[in-house]
Length: 210
Image (tube, rainbow, N blue to C red; front, side):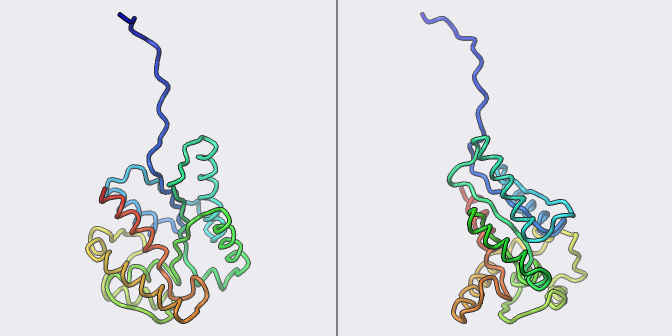
């Protein structure tokens, strides 16, 4: 009979699928994705909340890239893992176009997925309730959203209360927006745009179906 072995097994590495998400905003986007993760019980989704001193697009891309590289060095990054940068469009394009273009190019080079809402996350929320295909300002998007979510507050999470049941409608409308932009030969991530975030949400929901 073989003698029992008392040798301690090496700790197992985390080999579950990971989706890293770096968000520009402090409240709205992180709380939204946290709510989805909790609702679907997606323990392998890591939400990265950026510090206040780095909310420009390039900082968002750099943050998630840093986390991705750390995991590669630790050998806990798998081929099927993905990294996402979530940020607004219109304001950054006008404010610092050089930073904007640097962020886009770096993300493409480093295989960072982009979930850009142009002009802002409120457009993504808005298409949960209605079709929208024209250019719109951030203030106007909030004004229209307020018709569907009275007293809308960026610091509140509306996923469970208002958005969850309409998510598939929002994904369909965002996809339609993307198709219209391509038909009109509009620049990538042009206004209005929220197809990136719809693809990220769709991915999370598919993980929840497993």
